[in-house]
Length: 173
Image 1: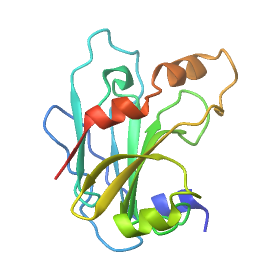
Image 2 (image 1 turned 60 degrees about the vertical axis):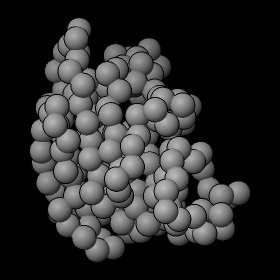
Image 3 (image 1 turned 120 degrees about the horizontal axis):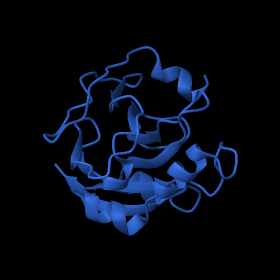
């Protein structure tokens, strides 16, 4: 099954705000929850601090100010594209053009033993560890789906995050 098709069985839309926003109300291997910020609009000059709370993956994340409200979040249990992972949380850019939002950042939760088994063949770097679990960040790759120089390409580039930024923004439950 195409990974994005798994987004459609259960969709929960919620606006992110200053308090933490729980995005996972469902459970099970096929559960999906999506928290969506307000529809794309002009980027504001002074964005408020937004927080994302992943109940199923067990972490909180301070949304980078550069993202504003141009993102959506998808959570999945046992994602096919990350073998042995327990949970995947994808933060995706909401473009003006195109139909599928590209991933700006993926945070993948593993047991420590499972991460040790796949770490050489899996993407990402550990950004947090606790109680036999690890959280691995996978920032966006170099390629984007946008035409070079387009407004979406420029906004996407401005929203890239580093591993260090993710380490500072993530906290565990």
